[in-house]
Amino acid sequence: MGLRHLLAPVVDEYSDPNAWNSDEHFPIKLALALAAAALALAAAQRAQKRPTKPKEGVLGEKCDAPETYSPDVLFPIPRTRGRRLLGLADGAVPFEGEDVWNCYEVSWLDHRGRPRRGAVELRIPCVSPNVVESKSLKLYLNSLNFKRFASTDEALSTIRRDVASVVGCLASELSARLCEDQPPMKGWTCVDDVCEDDVPESMLRRPDASLLKTTGDVVTERLCSHNLRTLCPVTGQPDWGTLLIEYEGPRIDH
Image (cartoon, rainbow, N blue to C red; front, side, top):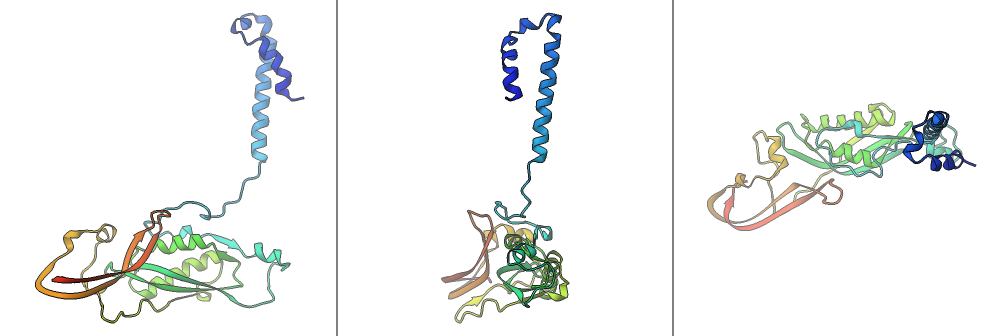
């Protein structure tokens, strides 16, 4: 029989506030106060003993696209979780190999602030103590979208260093290489690299129609850009694509 059940008749009898005006009820009031304190203490102890679910990074959570460089979003998962299920002891494993990650939509800014985009192949040695959780890796790579790098090599070195620190291996043991990006499109003029000026970041975050200019010449032209970036209306994460423009009229200033 619970403590609440035992106290119920007493609480019902003295639910009338006028019943508490006499000092003769002091022992009952004291007993009820102590009982309430005991119930609160028991509830707090049960809450402390309740097991908490371990944090699994961003997996299963709705996350907005990072606006700034965020290496701290990377989340490790110990390899021992899966290997113990296979009966493999911690430590040396009876095989060799590596994890190969094909990251198809990696983008950053070059030294002038122009978007660079390509597919990056990551190779992580199987002897590393951790793997990197896939959604956290995607968010991390998206966080590079507005970060400037002096060169492609610097961007790849940063990716290599950050991922290596999470999986627990040396940066020199992890491979990160830029695969061939969009091949030239015959009959189309790519405008991605025509700007030689420094590009302010604000120009990249919001379209500005006032930048469009035309010349007096009337032409038929086919233009393309491989740097179209949109945000998915469901997940809020970036999607990349190629924009094709075919027109006839006053020439657009590239």
